[in-house]
Every structure is written in C-alpha cells, then in structure tokens.
Length: 123
Image (tube, rainbow, N blue to C red; front, side, top):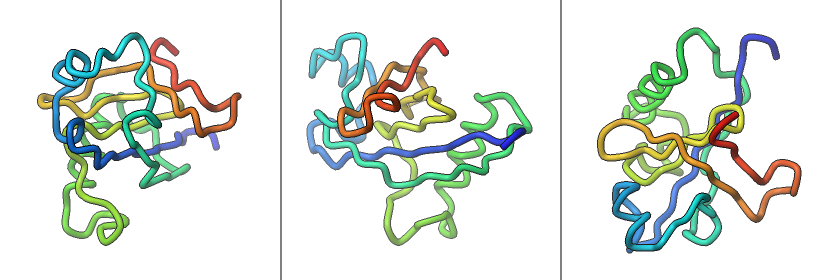
C-alpha cells in the first residue's frame, strides 16, 4: 500500500525487564547490539498494516503513544497502554519506548520467519 506503513507493538511482562528504561535494561541484562524479543518474553500484541505516512516517524511515534494510552485505544481489553519497555516497529524499524521518548534499536524476534526476523536499526 503506497502511503501506508506497517505498525507492530510488542510488550513483555518479564518482571525484571518491564517498565525499565533501555539503558537500565541494557546494563542489567548485558544487551549487546541486538535486543532479542524472545529472550525477554516479548509478544506481539498489536499489528496494523494501514498506518498513514502523513508525518515524520518521530511525530508518528508520538501520535501512536497518545492513541495507545487512551481508554478507547485498539485492543484495550487485550493489551495494556503503551509504556516504557514496549517495542514499536514501523515498517521493520524498531523503537524502544523509553522513559523520555523513543530510542531506535536493533531488535530480533527469533520466533519470526528468517526473512522477517531482523528488525533493522539503520534501514
């Protein structure tokens, strides 16, 4: 779809990982260049293939944050609001919801098909 992008949201309930900043988790869990979503109990809780590309990715991330913290957010009964430690993926580019904004990261979901597994930081 031209003019649209894919949005995925991953959340974890791992007690020593959830709701902590990326820097804290990177140090505490010795995360190297790539965050393996499976190792830290992440699961995909939301997917939407029709997100409009009407603004920059950072503006879009802020809009997603606001939307996913409303009481009437999509899947409100099945997922918690978007919070620190959640991973948002836009067209394969992964962002960690940090204590202040979003941090672009390399992430991999080892459960995904090989061709889709790496969520690139630089692309």
